[in-house]
Image (cartoon, rainbow, N blue to C red; front, side, top):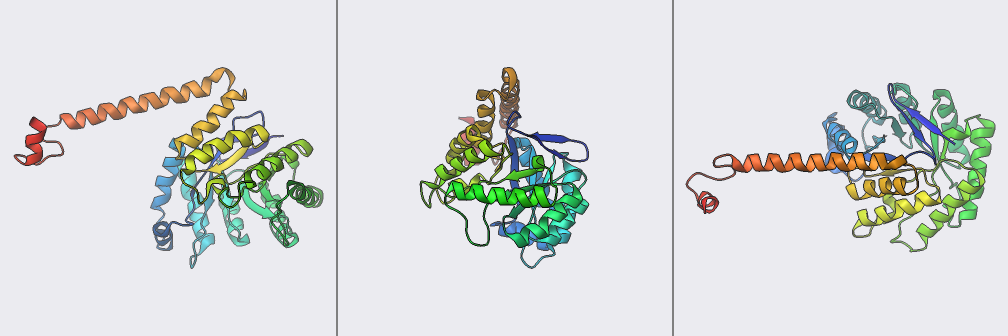
Length: 315
């Protein structure tokens, strides 16, 4: 089962026989007060840095959310999509709970996007799925409905069946364009929750073979040393059947864990990508060290002439 996402010039394939798809989560103002203020002032410059950092970190797809209270989110989404597509050829995830914002993003985007997201609520499916079908997009679907976020994996599986009946049966969205979010809950709330997520992933893979994604940062929410938890969780989820995740692509620990799991699961033939990435990192370290040495060799660099710091540097 291959989910194919496209920008105007690049294609990314999500599938169990493909490298794990890292979806960068950073272009999101939630919890970022300064970024929210900048967006309200129509200042999108922070997005440029977020794009650069995530591309450098190894993101393969970028999630775009413009959820800013008291702002024109639809117009912000249009501007953000245009800006991001001028900066990178990575495919995008159009992320909003507001129909008009999704419509604005999909109408502006050049390529085949992934929509984030729809639940198993009847009203939400009937509002969002026709939009997804009309734009030829793929869709992330969450197995929760009006009544509950199910605790038991078997109940989540029932809601996946309901989603498929509507998305594929009623709206004729291809199965390969339906990506399931098995619901990642914070380990800090209850230590059984991640086990239930892993069981859900296994059940979905066994019955449907669908591609899956989730917000991996949710798992470590509220806990110290979050990167270590995320780095441990991703390989476990990949073995169970997870094929992509929305993560902080700026975290080397998390990205390396996914790349190492690709190697160990035979999704990186002959370790070519692992070796290439290592060599690139070594070059980067060497260049940074050379730049630091050159800066320190400059006369008076970082010190005041004749001051105490200069005397220390000469000793």
